[in-house]
Image 1 (cartoon, rainbow, N blue to C red):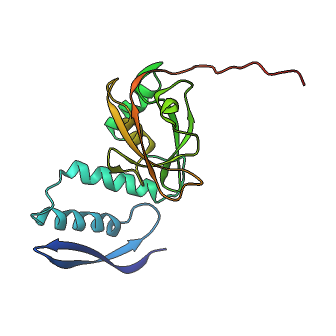
Image 2 (cartoon, one colour):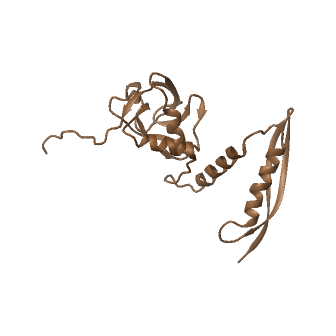
Image 3 (cartoon, rainbow, N blue to C red):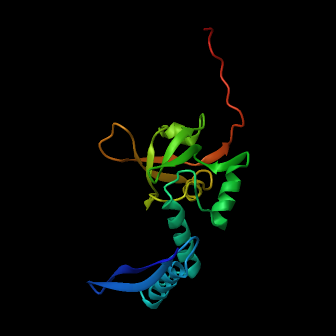
Length: 197
């Protein structure tokens, strides 16, 4: 069954101190899969953004952002979109060693949260704890960012600092933690002796 509806996309643009709202009206046909109207909305928006002189972004960057937004809109913490750079970073994370701070992350509520720190890692030594919510890395907001992209920001040459803006349960305000990256050896198996009983 097909339904036709009018969709209005508004784009607010600040030009010379004034805010201009552009409205794109399209007729979309909703059906299983991608309807032509859905594709038209994206194409029309893309044309408007390219026509505005203040938005000079490569098309590939806009497509990448749209793909991330679509997957993020699913609300599934286990769904993610990886571009080529993210995939390379993810594959690097599967290797036995890398240069970074030594944490495991997952996304909760759209923000990366530390699941664990590797023993004796730079993150652990700097005071990063499991449950810490990462808000920014080197001043870059992380909300809505894929875990692989966040991991890419945390990695870097050994000896270089990374500034984290962290929110922790019990804190009234976020705090900055500086971690100096080191060579990280990923533990394949973690073990410890337990007492009797």
